[in-house]
Length: 114
Image 1 (cartoon, one colour):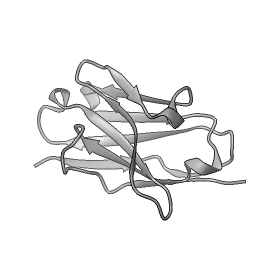
Image 2: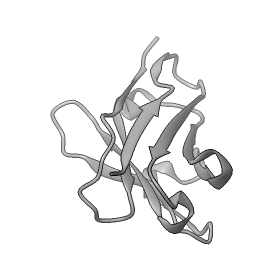
Image 3: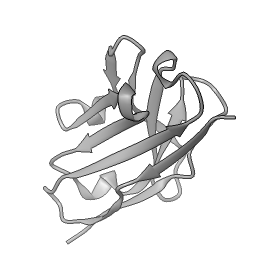
């Protein structure tokens, strides 16, 4: 059974950076695409970025140029590097197995505030 565990969230000032990690437990991580979503307070969960098995990356418009998704198949981990953070980036960040599976991590809180 696949499990996903996010880490790396916390409090950061506007303009700051942060790295989120999502550790995959199970078999054949390298065979799965992975996605990152964010959920701001009072809003629905939205796609931030996703990465295919071959490393192809896609980003939401708000994430382009500021966020970077990457994966390390040797470590069963997908990362989301957040740069030039804005207050509106505040929310819970979730990783998801694939692009449309029901397998999610528990989320990690990112708070951007001065």
